[in-house]
Amino acid sequence: MKKKHSLAISGILSLESLLGCSERFPQYSGRFELKTSSYTDPEFAGEKRLPWGLTITHRMKYRTSWEDRLRFEFTPQNSEVEVQGAVLFHLEKLANDSESSFPHEYFKGEEIHAEKKYYGGAFCNYQYQYHAFAVLIPGEEDLKKIYPERGEYLYTENGMPIYESFNPDEFEPGKEAICEWYNKIEENGDKITLDLFISRNINDERSGCDSESYLPYDTRGRESLKAVYHSIELHDEEDPRMGFDQLQNNTIPSINLFKEVISGVKDL
Image (cartoon, rainbow, N blue to C red):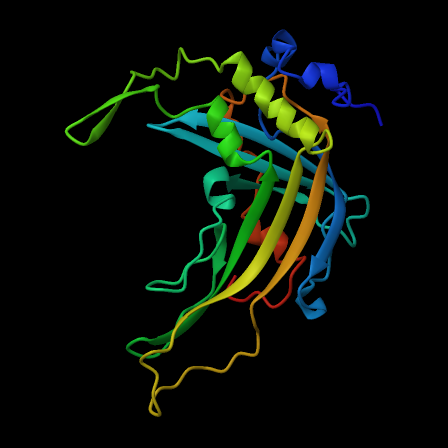
């Protein structure tokens, strides 16, 4: 298959070729193909599966900081056994890998659905939640080096860091930062990698449960689907800072699509 960009030509991706790098706009937009997919438990699988084809469109807008959105459009070869449709993700939430069980429980990624919460008394409850989480190479931190959220650090005054003024309308990424992005792609086998996880989690608090508490019994556990996609074509000719408001057109809620590739989702 012919690529729009011959990433295998290492000279284009090197820091020495600054002009070639600066002619493109680093982003996650492109065509991807599915390499592998797996479930932590086969019973978590749904009636359909994720398709081979995925197109990502990445757009961003500055609102005191850059807000990045990713539109995932899944294209099946056989719609009877593979899902089809487009969903929208908030990049910062999708790539958020922080997780905690104390003092409040929260999970990696972006929440895409929360079922009804059941209570058995004070501090005795549980709720099933579903999250989408992604590991991207190059990562979100690599992207922030190209599109910074503020000017250069100047000094600290009264304990507060002072930065140069920043005008997003006049800002243009530096050539070296752009080339570093493409060096990351070259180091990753001339491709962008997306590890996508769709997980079912249980947010619960049992410290207040006692012999008089009652919580409905549910046999479902924490499970996840992992799908690995690799880019086969980069769409980096257009500036991702344009077209943000139109990105959500023709999309559906994420859980409406993913409920077909996982099982047991309730309260829809």
